[in-house]
Image 1 (cartoon, rainbow, N blue to C red):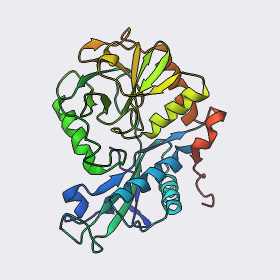
Image 2: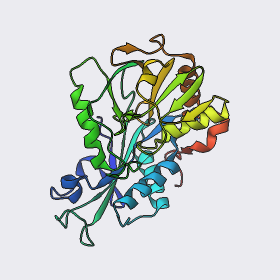
Image 3: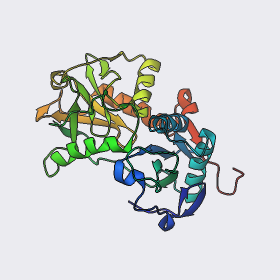
Image 4: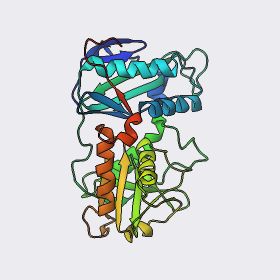
Length: 307
C-alpha cells in the first residue's frame, strides 16, 4: 500500500508516519471498532468522492451499535474526509475512516473511561482483484448469524469471519469465498455482496444476514432507473450454479464478474451482457459521466481553493 502525506487523526492532519495509537487500545484487543471503505475517482474536471453522505451515515450507524460517544458530528467527519483527500493530492483511490475505542479501560465492555479515537486515511488504489472474472468457492464458514451481532453494521470484529474464509482458500485457484447463512441460503462473499442474473433479471440476497453495501444499493438504483428487473430474496447456492451471469459488488471490488463457483462454470464463463451493462453504467456514474446520478459525487475543491 502506498503511503500518502497525511492522516487525519483526532481533529487534525498529521504526517502519515506520525499516526500512532497505544498498544493497549481497546479496539486492538477486542475488535471494538467500526470503519468505512470509500472510493474517490478522477473525473473530467476534478476528483470526486462517491456516495460520501451514505458512507458517513453508515459509519455513524455502526458506531451507535457499539455505543460509541462520537466526539465529532456527521458534518465534521464529512468535511474531514474531504479535507484529507484534498490535502493528499491523490486523484483517485480509497478512503478509510476508522473509529475505535482507545486506551483507558481493559475490561470487555467499554465505559466512560474508554476514549473514542477517529482516524481518516486515503491512498491510491486500483483494482482490488486483478482478474476480469473470478473463480469462487463456497466456504465452510457461514456468515455471522444475525442474532449474534448487528449484521448490517460495519464492525471491525466481524471481519475475522471473512479473514478465516479467505485464509481457507489461500494458495488455491480460487479468488474469493462465498458464505452461506445459518439456514443454508446465499449470504455474501467475504468482502462483497453478490448478484445473479437469470432470464435478464437481477436477483440478490435480501437484507437480514448481509452487510447492506453502498455499491449494492447503487446497483439496485441503476436497475430501477434503467428498467432492469430486480428481486431481493433468499436463494440457495444451486441458483448460482444455474445462473446466466453472476457478479460481486463492493467499494473495493466495484463490479466484479464471477466466472465459476465450486468449479462449475456460470453461464458461458464470460462476462455477460447484464453484468457488462451494469458495470458500464456504474463506471460512468463514479466518473461523473451520468447526469442522472450526479448527486452521488462530492467534488474536491482544487488546491488553494477555500474549503
